[in-house]
Length: 208
Image: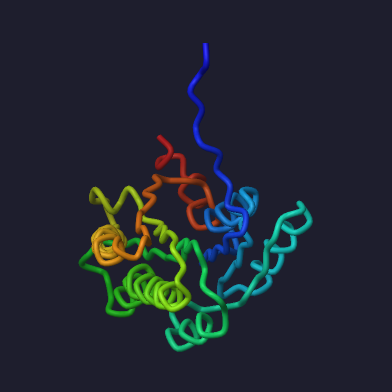
């Protein structure tokens, strides 16, 4: 009997960019892409963390570089893409959360969460795609959504709004870019223990 086999997942010769790659899910995704053969660029505001992450990937025999980049600074984002050849893969992972009841949300909270989770994600993707089109590169945009992009949550009105918006954004991108052989998809994890979510896992009531 000949058993069916899944295609091999290799990314040799591909360039990948992961935002928010200094820790948690972003660092794990960067390591996974590097394991599959991609040359990965890790970016985050925390330069020490992405440098350490890239160094660890290189020590494992993979390809990785690091750049300090605040993706909320759209001028810096534009400069970043202008200075580099196109990436084949973008992982739009940078994000934040400020949990509180909707009646207590401030304008600063709104700007911080929607600004990073949605505005920055849009323009990072746009900058990546513009360079892909200019260089004739086909590829994939991967956006880190959340289960909160499909449901509601207590004290999560801002976060839910940003992740529901990300889902719609990705679907719109997919339609705009299909003719250029550029895909756009989201990954929507539930709670995964990272430095951002660790306080929840330390709360016995939450775990119950």
